[in-house]
Length: 141
Image (cartoon, rainbow, N blue to C red):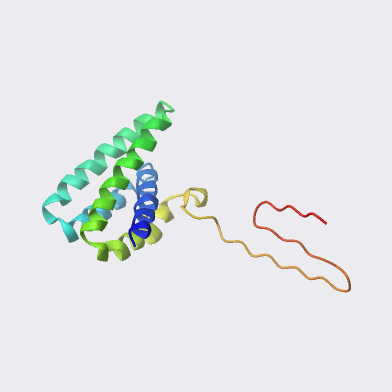
């Protein structure tokens, strides 16, 4: 279970930091505050203030083309979210909802934590063959 929570914390932290650069960043702030209220109500306002600080840092880093700051901010939020999930694993469902339904819609599909879905159809007849791949393919005959 711990590896699932770690993966969720990583995905959520990445989505959170990236969504803070969008016009919908206030939804990220309120969602994060609501998440903290469920476990540590006394820290919710502090987390909302941290979101505002993180937004300012990420915007400044992007303006300066400093990718290291963005990486460190994601790691920082990943640690925070992991601690929260360890304290109350029940909020995993709430965090998943925030990521999937609120934060991902703010981002372009390429910034989602999972590959886009694709549909492939093929039809072969006789001695025909079809080869399909969602990514790399190597065929050795």
